[in-house]
Length: 110
Image (cartoon, rainbow, N blue to C red; front, side, top):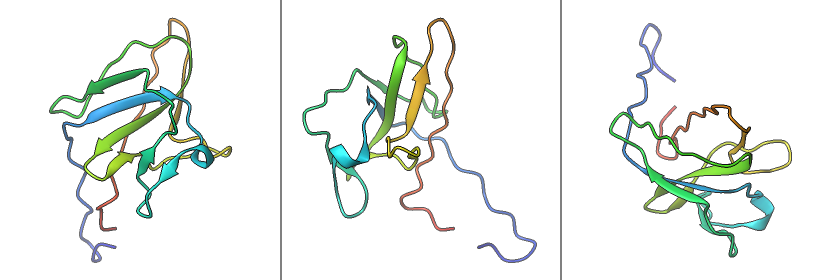
């Protein structure tokens, strides 16, 4: 928690590999004690892209539901889950733009 009157700095964009899977459920993957996904138990990614130096990425996907994860040195990372325990789910609709914001907070101090 910042001191009174001190503002919290904004996050910084980073270049990372972004790995997109068919929607993954947290109960069906193997995770490390730190929370990184180390195995998707055979589920293959549908796309892998790299974010640019502004931290942005764009990928074309067919309509469906996907999990978006970030490759970190310790494994695949995501910090958002829905009510069904799906990992960082995003829904892609036909002929529609879907946006998501990914925050890497595993080493953050709040």
